[in-house]
Length: 230
Image (cartoon, rainbow, N blue to C red; front, side, top):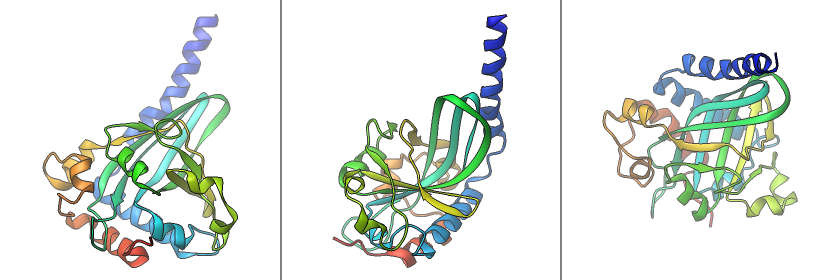
């Protein structure tokens, strides 16, 4: 009886993961969705990502429609993109595709979707982004980002984190804790966009030309923060 119950719980918990994969959109569609997320979460300075943090960021990671679901066992899954400041000049690198994954155990039931933005605030965080895989809160320090025009001045500990994270759910913006989640390259999406096997390191360090599908995203990032504040 006990083993049967465990089997049922595991099946229910894992079902959302299968649904996540089935609902994946094309890389171009996700780029458009990521552009909308960046625009919306930086447009309203009074309740969005503070502009001064955007200006200080080394890299940006955007995951539109990250899915969370579970029954006792929980899971989250999303596919998005990272881009970093170009070396020695204004602007941003071509986008490199990323996957975010994580699990949890505890009292939970149901499912939801969130748009997620991570700002990589220093060289240490950027080095993690160039790795094959790393864990937020383990390999790389991460904190919930402050929200609003004056929020950055009200924080201290958060500013020492390598990465700051935010979410949007049902139109509301908030800081987000992503500890325990893993980030890794999405090679399938990179090949779909670039037509060849680039590593994320090659893309983020400027070796790849941005594909036409990324034009709107690059334009929006340049509009928001072309130059980095030192």
